[in-house]
Image (cartoon, rainbow, N blue to C red):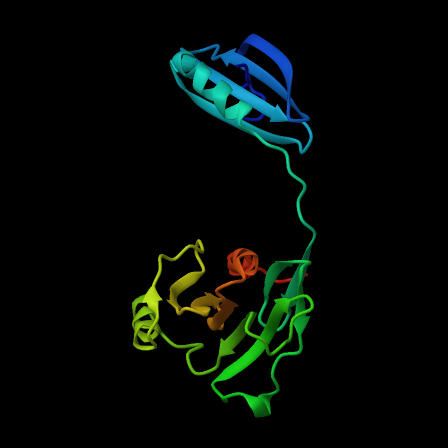
Length: 233
């Protein structure tokens, strides 16, 4: 394998030991292998020209790992990304991304929901009922927003609701998550704070799926992971 080192503001260049171009699965990859001019380090670098992305590994005496890096490059597979849509909430400054095989429904009106919950988003698979058994809702908890609530307290609340805790998977956002399975339905509840430096709004994400709808479950599980609390411009 070959590669290249990224230097700080180009103050000096490393000695190139080997360079080339390879094509893997239709993806053109420029590769280089360099030596540090002022040390014993060997650097490997691959430039994925189709997306202008750069990946590099650095360290001392990496020659013996060349075969490992070659295997990693050979394992790259090209796929076509599915079209997606983005839901943006300007009032609470967050966004979610969902596949185009899902659609938005009108959130429940205030008269149809408890005063402690404000539904902001309702998603269902296309061609399925907005009140059916496969649905994802995102609500703001008026009762718990702006409160000093810990992840442990939220997790205990989910446990009291009969949900089994599952490992948090949202970096920096998700505080608590739990699920419940029956023979016919999978239910999952998640809590996450947004606007943490100002209003600390607490979002509740509810997922409901039929157990037979495996593809819907797989697609739906990815949607909460796209939560972004940056202003949705």
